[in-house]
Length: 129
Image 1: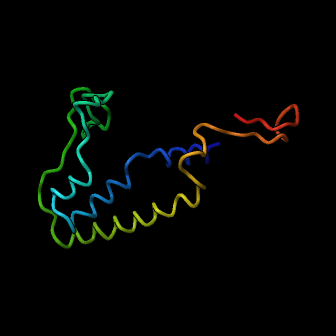
Image 2: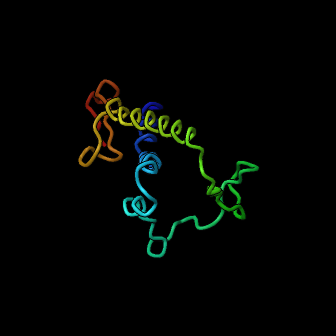
């Protein structure tokens, strides 16, 4: 059960791969080209459920009055940028290998579907939900 919970958490992890890809593209594309590939979220038409507050960098807890910390806009030194790209590439390669460990994904595999072998039921028959 715990392993499956971890697998579900991994599958529902959000846009980590997109963020890694976007970071790697900064060495090849300009800001406008990246924005074309990854357009800004349409906040005007799709309001977020939580519209204020952030995790405080001081306390590490969610606070309604905290504001999200953004980048400083400072340039990253060339050597550091190359090291970061190397690490992000390695992470991206590792993430690409994870689905093979967890099995197939995509449409038609179910969402919250599960099955219990008949060896574990009082009737001896499998349960499918």
